[in-house]
Length: 158
Length: 423
Image: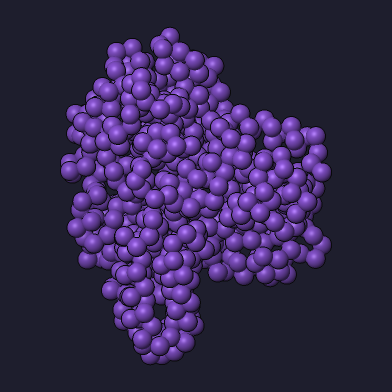
């Protein structure tokens, strides 16, 4: 069941579009913001609210890289794997993250703290390599120690 | 040298409305609404020779001119600022969004007036969090000051502006893919015709312009087309945001006259290659442009000159390949991006790009066969214009076909030695 708060926030988006279904991406994001990801039950509830079939809504949800249809950790690390970062040390940055967290790309740490995911170009190529943690951008990471950054999130509750 | 897009910017944050107004902000809108017809605004932009800064280089004023005007025109009409900056190696619109949001908003309102649009969207990629906050605030400021909403500046022109935050998919920034995305569908491209100018968002006339394109419009309207054309000594008009990334001394972004030669940007602005690194190749305008080499350093970065050199200006943000990085590895990285981001609508694109990625990964892993290079060349041809609905596939073919030309020996060495010489 969608919460009253979720429904309220979704309905506030309807005015931006000519049809309800056009707000489906906003609706998916609102649920994800509240729950961390979008499970099948929420998807079904959203589809009903938007006047779409669950399959139709899922086809949109799975089209986008940033709508999560699987559970993730408390913090999501997005490491840029596009060309400018690749040229300036993406491989080493990824290896440092993998070593530090003990998980590969696409996995979540056993304590549920971090999920490590790749992302396409973050648009900060003059300060590559770059990553995002929970929406915070970190750049110039070629020689920077990432441990203090990770430690800050380890201690933080969302 | 004049830098209309960036000279009013401050290093520490966005221009507030008051600061923008002090730098002649919203004077162009005042001028247009108080003394120019919509057709006159379009004509000024036509006369300025402004070409789209998102990559395709279509003449902005001509695009606007296709939108039906007058009593019989379908309503509502839409104008959309494409701020879904996701082209790998491209970081120019971020600066305009974060540092001068009102410049974009004013350009969008002027475009809306020219085509008599009722609703404007800013279509923003979700990773630009700072830009999102800045735009929301700026739109509120503009609304409160009477630049948006009903009867703008006392005229009979009204406009509602909305912000749409996408969820991360390169294809959503393609013109017709963007329309489907805004309608809440998968961002597959649409067949053209009909063109969006006639039948776009929800079947209504729609204009989609890049952020940098629209940010130029207030300056053109205020200072005139002759001034804009005189900013550049090349055939194209105005300035361009040029960027450099890769192993150069000072990676960055600079506003320079459009048509500035590669050498001046790469050596003059970016300071040349880092100590110990040599230049191997350049993608002049993002991931989906053909490689150029050190033989092309005197090529002017305008639309026609880059095309004559065998590539495209694209977004004008160049990516530099150095001699410590493997050309095959770089092309594999690019084609992985394209294979992942292909929307899956056209067979040569989704099937071809996956196959291309596999072949490149094999070569990079030392498992390539000599005939793989012919396969790669054939598949680059299958991706050429005319085989797919949109320009995504031709863009994906560009770095591949040019790498096979300029870095042939590197590909062959991988196959001969059954390993990547850079590992």
